[in-house]
Each structure stands twice: as C-alpha cells, then as structure tokens.
Length: 454
Image 1 (cartoon, rainbow, N blue to C red):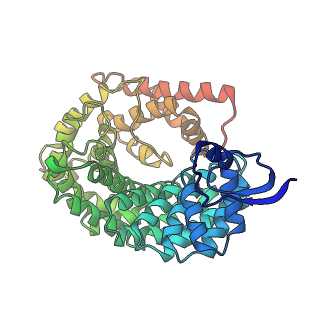
Image 2: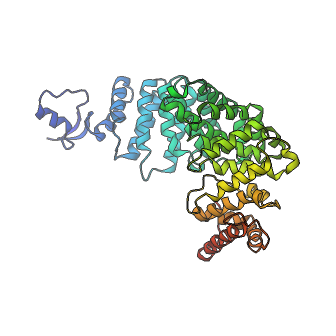
Image 3: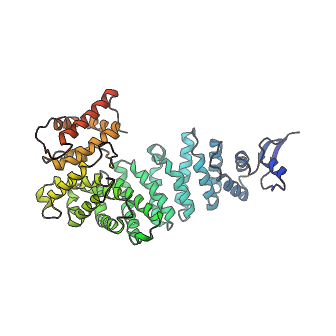
C-alpha cells in the first residue's frame, strides 16, 4: 500500500541501506519530507511553516543547493518562510543565501522576482546591525541593479545601502554594499544622482576612503584595496555630467582626498586610479570648478600618474582634465607649473602612443564633454577629444555612432576631416582621426539605421 505522506526529516540513518532509503526520491509515498533532496526540503518548508526549529534547519540545508531545479516553487517557499520568521536573523541569513540561487531561474516571472527583491530590501531596512545578513542581501541584489529590476524600489534601496555604508564595521559587508551602490548609481539619470547625493553619499564615501589612507600600503589586505576601487567608482558615477554633485565633491574635500589617496597608495591601488582620475575629470568639465584643480599639486600628480601608466588606463581621464584646463587659455593656466605648453606637449606624446586597436578606458553618456574641447583652435587641445572618440566609435560602435546621430554632430567631424591646416607633428593628425570617426559612422549606418543609445 502506498502512503500519502512520509516524514523523514530529522531521521538519522543507522546504516547504508537506510541512508539510501532516506535519499531516494521514489519511496512508497506521495509526499516525502527530509533533508536529502531539494524536493524533500521544499515540501518541509511548505508543511512546517510554524515550526521555527524545523524551518531553520531546512533553510540552512537549502542554502547549500547551488544548482536548484524547482526555481519558482523554491522562491515561493523561501519568501513565505522569511516573511513568517522575519525577526529571526539566523533564518534570514540562510533564506537570503538560498534566494540568491533560486533567483537565477531562467523563466522567473517578473512579479515573483520583484517580490523577492522587495523582500530583501525590506530585510535590509530592518536588520542593518546584522553584518552577515546585510552581506548576503547585497550579494543577492548585486546581479539585479538595473532599471528594470530595481527601478521600482529605488528610494528604499538607496536609503538602505547608504545606511549600511554609514553604520557597518565589517569590511566584507562594506565592500559588497559599495559594489551594489556603485552598480545602482551607474544607470541612474541626473535627477536621481542629485537625490542620492542628498543622502550624504558623497561625504560618506569620501570618509571611507580617508579611513583607508591610514592603513600602510605594505599592510593592505585584499578588502581595503577593493574598497578603494569601489569607493572611487561611486564618486566617478555620482559626478558624471552632474555639476551639482561635482560641486559637492569639491566642498567635501574630494580633491584633497584624491591627492592623499594617490600619494599614499599610488603603487598599491592601480585599479582604483582610473575611477579616481575619472571623478577629477568630471570636475574639470565644470567651468566654475576648474580653478579648484588648477594647482601645482594636482598638475604634478596628473603628470606623474600618466608617466607611470603603462597600460594607459588613467591617461584617458587625465587627458580630459588637461584638455579642459588648457581649453580655458594661457591666462587661466597662469604660472602654474608644469606649464600649459609643456603639459600639452607631454599629453600629445602620450596620446600618440595609444593603441588605435586597443581598449579605451573612458565612457560618456553624451558627447557634450568632447564637443566642447573640439571648439579649440589649438590642435593639441582638441586632440584628446578627437582621439578618444575615434577609439570609442570603433570598439563601441553602436553606442557612439548613435550619439553622433542623435546629437547631430557628425558634420563637425566631416569638416575637421577636410582641413588642410593642422599640426603636422601630431600622428595620426586631427584630420586623420576625424576621418576614422566618419568612416566608423558611415559603416554603421550602412548596416542599420541609428537607434537609441541604450
């Protein structure tokens, strides 16, 4: 006779034969609970909802299943268990760990995924003193920091993340929180970036970076280095084409922190430097703030960084800083050393070494920062903008050829390409680079019409 139900949970097998019986799926019963298979565990979660001790043990076991099969059923069971026992941080730690794997389901309904994300954010707002739980929450949320997945709960999510950064004492949790925050800010439009800045995100992130500067570079562990990179990524994204946040960055001693980080850890934090100088590049694009970086200490640091930049990862952002400052003219540069002309010559030599087929270590949401520089009558000032776009229109052709189309600026490059008067000491010359941009654009539009830039 077949049984309707067989409960094997917490039954300890006493020999190999009984162990096989506990493990087997097709025992002589319609329903089987236990801790040996995914199906047994999920049924246990569904049936023992009010028995906390059972639920806790089952959830711990489920968290070890890194390749689940019953995705939708698992998500529903986990969500219900976490909602029923939302005051138990121990169960929630295991529950959110399980959620990470079950959210990977290929056909998870949008509403179920959003319900899961909403629950995790709710947990973050209620239990931020539990570092392990906050770490798991951030790991769980990291893959879903897109407008489609997180836009519906942006306010609560941003507030929770900033509060964790403010309060946690765990480096591991801090790092994971910064990584999620950075990924979130990356896709936000300007109004939302300004709003997040009102949560003191820039000041708090700078405080984190300042605290890292007190650690000897010889004693740095992996986490502090990654923290520095994550922190500068946030500041880079926060200030990108956002003058209001650039002003806040400067008012919060961001330029001083930049110099301190560079001088303290220039050998140890190579991965953080592109973001660090990217943030400085964003400040340099704001006319009202350029005087704040027009100092000997900043210019010397920029020149030294480029000289030591073997892979040209920092040179693109630094080239933008120098181009924006030089664009203001000789009078603006004044007697700051190194001189304006020597820095233009220095950067021109550097840019001529950039691999035309290599990676371009910079991104733009619009071409406005580049187009402003190209109005300069001096080829060495305009060179950074044209050289950078020549590379970007090749390696990320769809995005940047769409921008050329939607912003209506391709004719500017057609004009530059036909110039007969240009600096012959630059190779490739300004007209040659402009022709590359035009060719990339024309090869793109012959294949497909420009679309949006998403």
